[in-house]
Image (cartoon, rainbow, N blue to C red; front, side, top):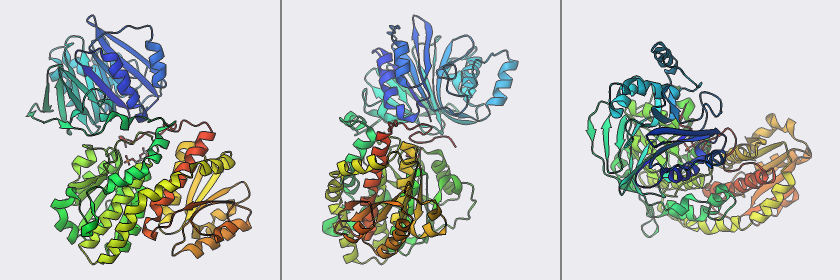
Length: 609
Ligand code: BG6
């Protein structure tokens, strides 16, 4: 997934473009580039590699243009290179485009354009758009040329276009990929992500599917691709710029982990009414009857959000007699599972833009199924295309590896289970107990974060390991999966998560003194079972790092290192237990010198299939 940005207004565009690209660098870091119209000519500078490489390349240039585009790339078609970097132009260097998405029918369009005499410089699908638009721009103004060109395109695009023939406007368009407009005083911006706009304005408009916008410094016009005009009021974003910055930490990932006490408070705020022992979600009010009638819940999500779904299955089935099924969104969309009208499909997504999860939502919508979302990014596609939903309200999550969003997802899932339980037979005293424990979580999380130096020391002991196994039982099994994912994502160490009871059915063969086992072993209903599984590991000289409940002396006799977690109820243990596995992966990656916030080959959310 790439990041596009465009600026038109009284200010010099270059610093605004570069700052915006910096804020979107977590979307991709294979190459970066800018285009400006200076003295009536189109000037393009682009380089393979991170944004700093482009900044160095730009040093000799003194661009003062007020109009420009920028792009940060996560390569899909055409390997990372200077040539394949965006912006792309037509053969005559008249227009420039930046694109986030995939042109699925690019081979056919390329053949058609070559027959018309176009010569291509790159192996990308996006370059087609530049030639195609310019083909129509010969006889049409830029807006009409973009409209005609996009009618031929099959695929996904977040697109911005400028032309030296019309140097007073930017044309933007959206289909499948996110596009947000920034509405400032005598200035307009377009970007893939609102964090890129925040330094200039907090007034934004999210383009809807199939919309096109014409931006000038003084104004903006939004239409459907068929030309039908749309009026849209800007909305004010309540995120402040600091939230999208590192706040003095070495990495966004550590900053976001250290924010988790505040994350829990923000996720609970206005939703858990302790004095009335009830849960209220404003975003679900219109569908409360359907929730009460529901006879099945299917959760669709990807990556870390999928593991939040796995824990939801335990929590909801434990508190509410509602069968829950959890699917990888990329599998659900091809399962062709018959869905009866009383089924609910719940999508969990931090970015709200993950293509597979969005497609799963659309599939359920097409079948008339009630779709809900737990989403962090305000105004994102999944938030707008689900029928109802819950925002996390935790501010932007910048690091590619998801941490605070996961904790917030678990808190909101627990509140949702209580809400569904309130509609069924969940006892008031049980609700009271869970709410009281939820209310104490921020403090308990802080006591775990206060142990980060201890976790750093443990990480140092194992940072040269080539493999890790994470184990847990019941609600802690998905935490073992998440722990392994974190270790893989940011330290590039091979790691696997297993139900502790599964070890003896295969993975135990791997265990020896060089293979650390991280055991999530709360003092819960399956403690003894998990303990005996760890005995099996110990018997094979495996090294055990235990994440255990404070006061548990027995575990000390088996584990090599123990990280103690404050007591809470079994249902909420995962929320506390995930924090040490996040920190362990963080510090192992740090000792290995890995690019923690931008791990290779990954991106914050993948908007292509
Ligand atoms: C991946 C991210 O691209 O997408 C993961 O690197 C994330 O951190 C996954 O968990 C799902 O993203 P989202 O935004 O749908 O929760």
